[in-house]
Image (cartoon, rainbow over all chains, first blue to last red; front, side, top):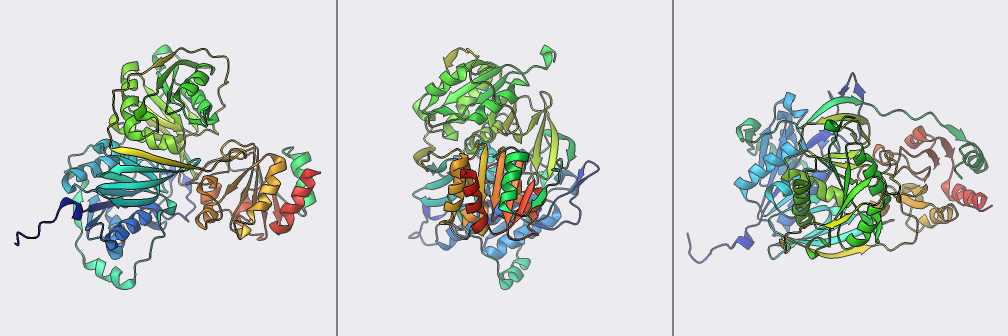
Length: 263
Length: 319
């Protein structure tokens, strides 16, 4: 090995992307007999995780990231999302396998603990997660991970720029946007407008099928993943009373003013 | 409720341009259901917030963190201060109104207490039982927490706002532990300055979607909104298309609103948009497509061209 070439830490940026397999966002989920009906529904990569993956791949294309690793914590079938991740350009994939029965109650806190454990092992410079999974809608995993590893966090990210061991994050906040600068290692939570994810092409999908996935059982990690919340009840929201169609604007105005009395 | 069941709640307050956001008053109502309420003010408007909080009915004590490190609301600096407040004051529940700010801070602090945050609660059923929504509002879940210190963000439209007067709580400064950690730096806020009604709290909201066809056309909605003193909202699609800034987005991943009157024009009614406005008291929908899913949640539906209907409605409203 040549002594002339010694890569500096700055040239070896490692990015890890958290990816979740969820019920497809277009599915109208039903609840029956105190159970969310998820059998046989269409499953997909969580839309915000797609955005996270895209951002990591772009960092690699810009030669800012030298290695991109995709991680999923989920049931056996969740390896689908890792195949997609590798088809998009991730170098490696890690699947922390959760038994089906346990998966239903796996909480963001537990996932964050698993990712925190991987942080010790992988020592990435940057974590990119989706801001929210469209099933649970907790929107907490990135912040929980950041809290556990005591790393700075850039949530609701609509733009990121990595330079000199830091990442500048433009965040979407309620009144507009905010720009913060975070020391690496940091955790970024991808929001909708961070990028427009690409579709993997067929050739990459075929190639990804043959790539190895580092598969590990969740109970071998030495992490406490038991749920802290017990679900007492699940039900569908109360249906709204059926409305009516009006034929003209005049009728609409009349109803809103004189019937509903809101105008 | 026996005294044994009472916890001690902390509400992390939020301000906008020096004034307490109304949703914080709703969070105080939610918090009061589990026990006496301590309000926590921080950031550059901490002193002003503390003054207002001390007058809110139901607030027993106000704590203020006004140091430089927490003045920009950075979660890396705020989390250790909140942790210390919780430990020093025997706090059992930490609440904050759901917002970009609270979603940034609450889970980070929860992690320090090995607690699973309960996000966007819509009801409190006991000191350990809360209701929240999942799957874009299609699942209502009642959950029971086993955590010693519980963390929750509170949906501002689900609880009555505590009265802004009637209280007289003492204000005390908290120990803030010195200099900032330096792991993060606030650079700037790019806030759209507006004298228009706030989308999160306006009694009437006029919203537009792809049917508007351009950002220019939102002028039609603004013309209707003005005499109604309404706020103008938008779907994710038009924000993505650049017609509107992100602070106007209503939906599963944007703002959740519950105005007395919601008028939606040129919006098809995707599940994700409905999730953000279905608790509106009265919903009126204008769309050229009679089969648009949005009509299913409308109290009044007009199948028609918004480019004619909206100006016509504006004329009627102005009398």
